[in-house]
Amino acid sequence: MKLLKLLATTTAVAVLLAAPAYAQTRIALVVKSLGNGFFDAANKGAQEAAAELGDVEVIYTGPTAATAEAQIEVVNSLIAQQVDAIAISANDPDALVPALQKAMERGIKVISWDSGVAPEGRQLHLNPSDIGLIGETIIKLAADYLPEGGDVAILSAASTATNQNAWIDAAKAAIPEKFPNINLVSVVYGDDDSVKSTDEAKGLIASYPDLKAIIAPTTVGVVAAAQVVTDQGLIGKVNVTGLALPSEFKQFIDNGASQAVALWNPIDLGYAAVMLANDLVEGGEAAPGATLSMGRMGELTLDDTNSGAMAPPFTFDKSNIEEFSKIY
Image (cartoon, rainbow, N blue to C red; front, side, top):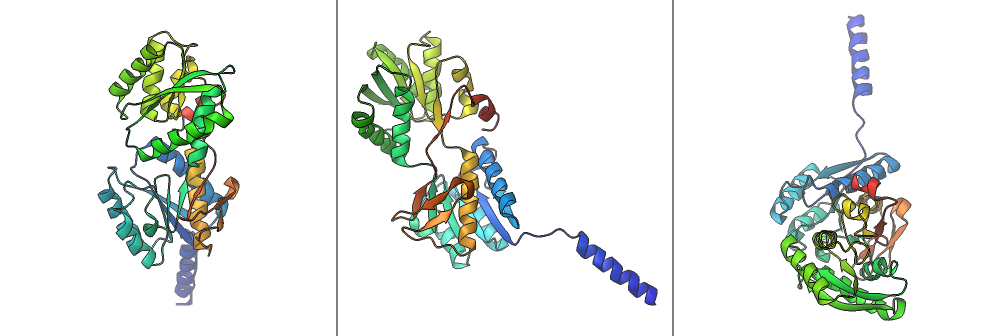
């Protein structure tokens, strides 16, 4: 009998020792949709943050379809799981608010990142970069390769796109003081449609024979413009730049249609989002003027809307496009 009790006790101890150690803090990284290279890269950074923090588990999740309704289902599931924090890149800034408010009422910390949620539905928002920095960067990407200046044009997405319009306004504001030899001759809109963007790029080249650069703050437009420059044999004459995914744009850096493009680094973005969510879980305050830790990315200072910007856009050129094209 004593032997049986000893065996039972030994077995119980062995089971306890063999059981997986559950993280004290669980942070859900909710993306617009799964299977997206940008968000997969963000998850890589999120997992780096979890490993650095220790005792933190990152739950990488999202819907298969990029809709608000599908994200709401994900959020409700996370509420039922009683996670400690939700960091979400939203498909809709307003539709998700009731579900996220419910999460906060249950004591779950909520932040948005990349694509924001209305202020009443989150505690803070992490912008990938500052609007002014993005606007200045897209002009600088052209100006850096035009030492004598020249004519440039912008190929944007839709004329009603709030974010792109804000970036373009910031770019225009930066020209007189910082890039006085750059002449912005036109802004056209390709509606993030590859066919229309191609036609608009062709129109710019035909209308402005002295055009030196096309700046496209849209991943669709920048590819379309670079393809036009390639097809028309204008490599070395018209430089295409803007915001691009390395995996989609590598061929145009390689062939010289573009010297450099930019985008926010999604690895850093996912890392920073988890660091911020963890800071809130540990008692950090999200209030105007407050600063919270982003780990190796520094500190985030919140504005009047409890939003802040992570870092300047990340530049891709021949020195690093190969590496990042394999990531996203």
